[in-house]
Structures are given as structure tokens and as C-alpha cells.
Image (cartoon, rainbow, N blue to C red; front, top):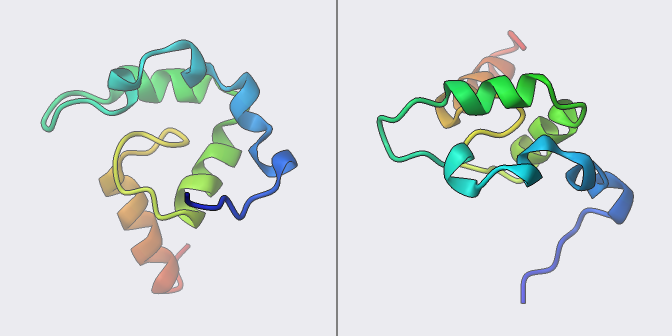
Length: 85
């Protein structure tokens, strides 16, 4: 069983996250499908920043997290590693 290294307060954002009210297919669309609706929902969510931080810290490679797609998170990581972030 994998151990979660994050403490409960660090995951508290999940309890009130708007994504909890939508199905996973909304945030993990089929390849080539639009992520626009998921990003709009993320934009209205108070847990967006914590969600994005979680995704970056845990190297989430699929789906929309914190309002960013896989490609956008990868670009963010690259920019940060180059000192532009």
C-alpha cells in the first residue's frame, strides 16, 4: 500500500474542491478532447493553488490539476528549472 507523505492539513483542500462534485472524466478527458470546462471550474475553486502545488510536488502527469493541463504543468516545470519561473 502506497504511503501518502503529505499530512492531513496539506490535503484539506480536497474536501472543498469543486472537482469533487464533477466526475473524473471531466478532469481526465480523452486525448485530444477539450480541457476548457475543467479549467473554468478550477478557476472558480478556492483550492486551485493547493491543487496545483500538490500536482507539481507529486509529479501528476495526467489530467487537469490546479487549472493546468499536463503540457502546461510540464512547461511550468521547464521554465522554473531554467530560472524563468
